[in-house]
Amino acid sequence: MGIMQNTDGYRPGEECSHCKGRCCREKGCSLAPSDLERAIETRGLTGNEREKILSLLQEEGNLYAIDRFHLEGKEIYYMRMRHHAYTFVGEDAIGICAALTAAGCILSEEDRPKGGRYLESRPDGHCIQHYGADEMAEDWLPYQESLSSIYLEYFQKFKEDGTFDQCDEEYFRFLRTFREG
Image (tube, rainbow, N blue to C red; front, side, top):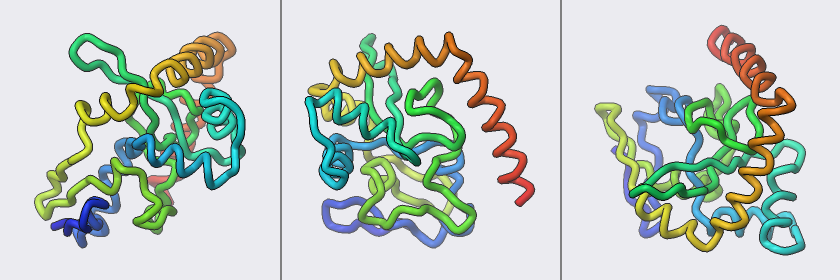
């Protein structure tokens, strides 16, 4: 079972290597704003909030995406790990995390987003996520204007120019390779 590390979350348990990251194969971890700020600071990105986030999302090899969920009738925009073969606009929160390889996560335990650090592995495979929708909604509230404007602008663009369709095709090619490899 996952072991608590002070206030930093849970260490992956032995069961993670047995299931080969089932959670990571189903969706990318949710980021907390502190994860976003660390990524922006590490890269030395400048500009207003929207410009810094967009610069991060448009980087070559970007690992992040904006997605949304509904909570109590409100649409909440947040950031999560991007899925293999998809863009930085999350059309669906289901997919294989871009940081997952055959050898496991490419990120160190310290560099994993809060959603990954706060996932408690369980021997029975029913892992528990301790970074839930209520906390995420509260954390991401100050970023709603920037995240929603980027999401809505690029969602429409990617839908109209066929990017999402191309991503789907690429993802299915990736899945065949991933499962055969």
